[in-house]
Length: 251
Image 1: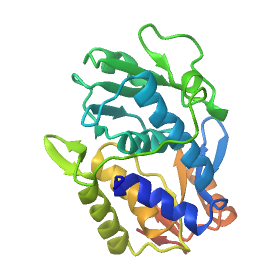
Image 2: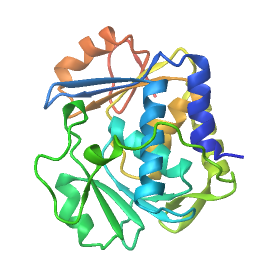
Image 3: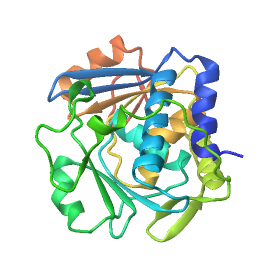
Image 4: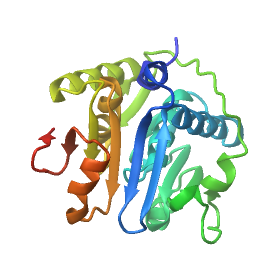
């Protein structure tokens, strides 16, 4: 059985409506807006999982450090890590693979992961502005990989290393559904979130719980407070995370 925390949640989103906007990303510093349907996100997840397995030789149970902010590419990296059988962590020390953005690159490099992958997080999915020695350019490499990936990871395999506490895929899936219920998320929700993704608890609340509840996400990086009310209206937002907007329920 494939790992429920990734494949089943994404499969459910594809079954509900493969073309519906599932994750919309704004960066108010760059002016970027990126919209991903369930189909598009699944394509990026598959390509990233193939990158991990075919190019970076990830084995089931290997640790994958994810040192990235809330971003649509971070969502693809996390879901792909679990689909490929990796154990996601925020600590790069000795990890088989570490994914990081450019501002964190030297700090992560100093922790000596086996493989280092750098993400520019630039608009339109562009690659690094300049090569980074010893680091793979995620955007330049991932597109060459296949857009189908068959996961065969058992549900009881470890999926998260939360400061030494291992959480299986099944447990991660259950925690995501529990948090979705606690937050009152449902299939008609569209959640505007300014939450950072700093650790596994944030990954659950900011990404997996909305997926488990059938909601769609509007992620806002470097938000300009004065723009958020208009954005919530334009994006038909029904709930917020990390910020309070008049007339919109806060999670």
